[in-house]
Amino acid sequence: MSMVGRFLADESGVSSVKYGLVVASISLALVVVLQGVGGKVRDALAAVDAPEIGSLRDR
Image (tube, rainbow, N blue to C red; front, side, top):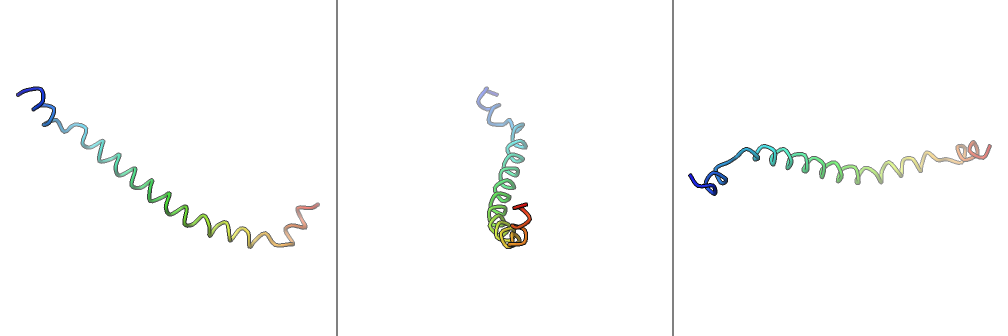
């Protein structure tokens, strides 16, 4: 078998590529979800920042 034939038949790196694609997909999904949730968390924290809390900060 020629060197090119052995190279084409070699599948030793396929698992690493699959795992890399899975990790990349999960990372992308997390980024999308966290960006969507981030605005809601910011709004919730802004709603909690009431005048009573502001007066405690001034002390």
